[in-house]
Image (cartoon, rainbow, N blue to C red; front, top):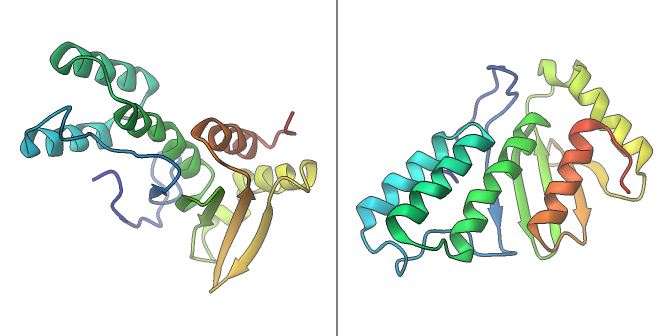
Length: 171
């Protein structure tokens, strides 16, 4: 499922890690009122989990609209978190948590991972250098993390992870 905690420490097609995203900032689900069949909802969660491109997300949205009508906010948020998931994965994160206005990314736990000597990690360090007050990187319980405060919506989370992934200064 979308929120499973599968762990991969091998590099597959540019992926450095597994992907987990959880949030208490907004509901991210397919409501019973939208699709009453549990079996159908589970199938749609699996289908969404397999989507790898923005075009695939657009097609998924269109199929939902065609079959079930206007997409409710919690389902739209679920679909949009896929982008967040992809950005976190591309940035070498095993886990991403949005909670109480804070976003915490957990980098690959294996300290001898090739990720830490990669250009991708250098780009993340460049982001921190360009944006010293945007967030903080720290080690806790043997894992490297990055945290950002005042992340109260999906758009802010996407903005931060895009800038992090690309080593850009925040505007």
